[in-house]
Length: 281
Image 1: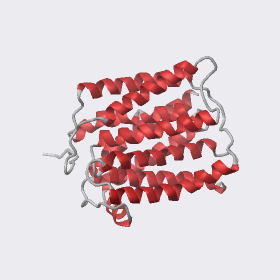
Image 2: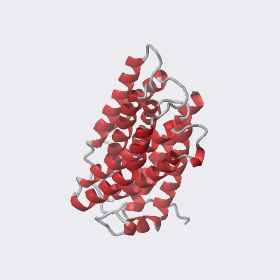
Image 3: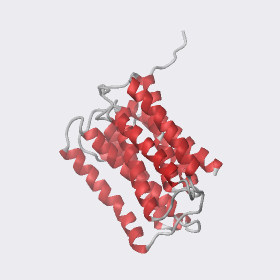
Image 4: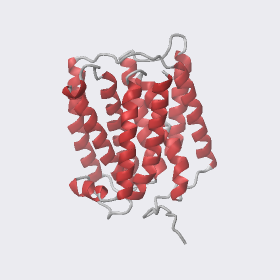
């Protein structure tokens, strides 16, 4: 269990630092209102964004490893602490943490400690044919919804909406990884659905970062990324140790509540973000 929890926290660190790098990269190309091939090509030409994607890839692998032994709500709550990592790392690129944001970061840490203490380590649960089909169909449906939102929602309000859609995509990545049979491997369509959800989430996340501050976007993403797996986990009876359900709920609510507080960040969205480089004299 300890190794799985460490993997989940390692994923959070990777995702948190990746968000800051991706914001820096996403703000450099010209703004594109619509999500499409042009946006993907622009982001792929930005070294900082690509470096963030590489960190994300490592985070996805660690998340998968953690989900093989820990329930959805525990792993996704741990991954949500990426918001705290992002909030601290964002100071490097000029975002400042208010007192309430610092308190929220601390609350995330406490909530995660409660969740980790109550988690029940066990193998992946099974999923019926219809839920599997819905999980596969969610990839194109979410992609179409993201395109529609980018075209119809203008200005800063689009950032948390796209961030929430990215969180939905990452959440279903987690669900697919959790229910993937140990014997399935790459021959199981759910494995490819998990990869598609991860890729789609990165594109939606990049679009959101072009429209709003990294802490608020990351918080909106993480809030949804935690809530959906928690609901699915309850439906699959994938939960806490016997007698520690109250502790699990308290930790979960504290983590989500603190994350929602970070969503209310009033940090301005700068036109561009510069990463300071050390130069030799």
